[in-house]
Length: 246
Image 1: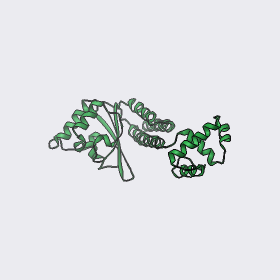
Image 2: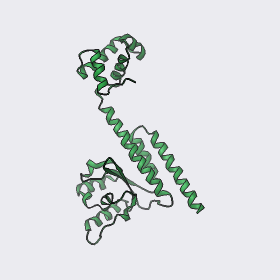
Image 3: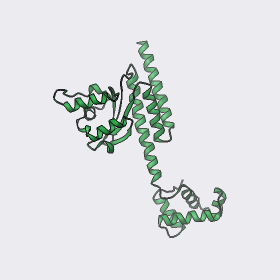
Image 4: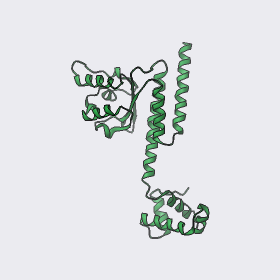
C-alpha cells in the first residue's frame, strides 16, 4: 500500500508540473509540444484531439499527432463510422482503454480491420479521455506499442489530457481573435491614447514616433472603420472591441 501511495504521489506531482508548464505556454504549438513530449516518455507515439460527431475527420480534428499515412487512410476510407473507439465516446464519460471499446469481431469486420491496421502504425494500446462541454463531446486519444499504464499513470494522463486540450483550444481561440482585428497593433495603440484624450503630439512623444505618423495612424484607422472623424473612430473602435476603456 505504501508503494502504491508513493507511486500515486509521484504521478500527481508530475501531472501538476505539466499543468504548470502548459499554463505558461503562449502558443498552441508550444502547449502541444509539451503534451507530445510528456506522453512520449510513457511510450505513446501517437495522439489525436478531435470533436466527436458525424462530420468528416478533417473538420473535427483539433490537433493531430497521427502518422500522416494513417491519417490519409482514415480520411480516405471514412473510418469514423465504423471505428469502435469513436463510438465508445458516446457511451461513457470516463477515460477508457481501447480494449474497453467493445465490438463484435465476428460481425463487425470493418471495426476489427480498423484496429488491426492501426497496430501497423505502432498504435496497439490506446487510452482515451472524453471531454464534455457546451453540449459537445471532444476527445483525446493517445496510443503506442507498449506504453506505461501502471499505477497512477491513468489518473495523471487524464488530468494532462484534459488540461492540454483546453489550453490548446484557448490559445488557438486567442490567436484567431487576434487575427480578426481590422486594425494593426500600432493603430490600436494610437487610438487607445486618443481615447484617453491625448493629442497627436502627445502620442508621438509617448510612442516615440513623429506627430505626422501618429496622425496617419488615426486616419488609417478611420478609413478602415469607415469613421468620419476622430470621435467617430474612437466610438467604432470601442464598439467592435479594437480598443477598450481600460
